[in-house]
Image 1 (tube, helix red, strand yellow):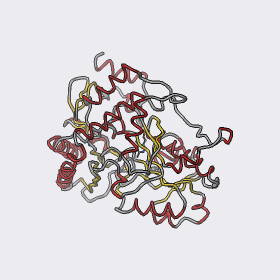
Image 2 (cartoon, rainbow, N blue to C red; image 1 turned 120 degrees about the vertical axis):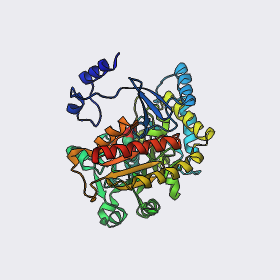
Image 3 (spheres, rainbow, N blue to C red; image 1 turned 60 degrees about the vertical axis):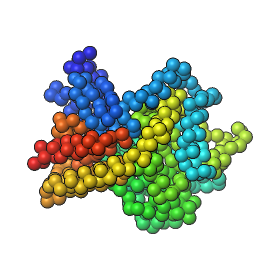
Length: 430
Ligand SMILES: *Cc1c(COP(=O)(O)O)cnc(C)c1O
């Protein structure tokens, strides 16, 4: 099909996520049709190339069409694409579970529950946490604490934990019991009844993503772990975005030597190739669910594609690439390089601030006097559209530009990306 035919057919039948479809379907709007990906580059249906500046919404790790991951998916597809994880098991899922557990300190996270997306990985943790407390004599613990500006996904349970009003308010009637807190101090100052009703606290460690690339003060995660231990509250880490090298370590929790009670992994788990998620938990949580069938301690939870062999094969290859290419070691100088480039960008009159956590960057756009642009102007989105014409694909969070490239990005690719953002900023604001 020709590009124009694809665009017309898309507008006829498709409803895109997080998209005002009136704008999308406007005859004057030509949606980009992505046809190929190679390494750091995405190629559209007209053969134009773009650097993948947000890792295809924070999923891609080693680049597109990585030969090793592609070969693993191909080989697995030739053998078994899917069979049920309810009542049977499969080798890629078994091997991957062992590999995942081995990425954490011994005897910390020992059990792996598979699902499909970040949101489902969170749902699993929520249900496990509530049922764990029921099974250990604390059925009063059925509430969660979550932080302002948090984002944990869009299914109803995960969305209840979110702290972003625009995504949240409309669905408030569907909300789970959640106490939203600004920071650790406000968590500590909750009244005793609320504290005693908490099943768990959930946090995006080190940096909140969709809330605007907001970094936490160093030490906060460790202090939160200590607070949870004192209060008998489970600690849920959402590493859907930060996992798999994004922060410079394999997982963000390693920066503060914190072992959680649950960790949710998705996006980068398969290297950004297949929808796959995993919720890891401790032997202590797992043991509480063991009993005679008639005791009704079973976790009645699952999805059709749990333990999908194609996804697990991709994830195994993803982890092998980390080792073979020494990805984390080679990433360190690139993180420094990114910091230098951000320093340069910060001198733009319309850049009011920049934040970096490993290979994740947020760049705030504002008027030269520091006051924000009206949000309705969608200045951030316009800048990203302008940057696209300079060969960079990314999306903003309101007026925060996001640069979160695949870990395989080279120095020159980082430089071109920042140059494209600078050009976009000048075109739209200047
Ligand atoms: C993307 C994201 C999710 C949701 O994952 P999906 O795969 O989109 O359901 C949850 N938490 C964080 C921190 C995320 O960035």
